[in-house]
Image (cartoon, rainbow, N blue to C red):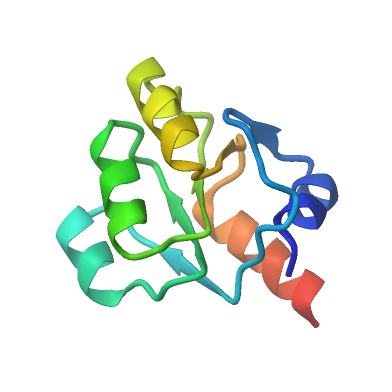
Length: 109
């Protein structure tokens, strides 16, 4: 699925620059960085409540397509800056991880 379509369909807020060609194949939900590094697949949307700089490093390490921060959490400025530098989109929503995952599943079917 294309990231731009996801943004439009779920009415997500965009915190960083977004390359319209970015796609994703999977969704991973997790907040413990070591577990995300071990289990998330490349080209995934990573759904989390984490907002600090280390989420960008983890996303870059495992080739995450985009980070989706849920529950209306405020993303740190240095996190946004680093994500822009590396070309990793950060999206936000006030919805829960469960709600967003269900909506993505509906879009894929």
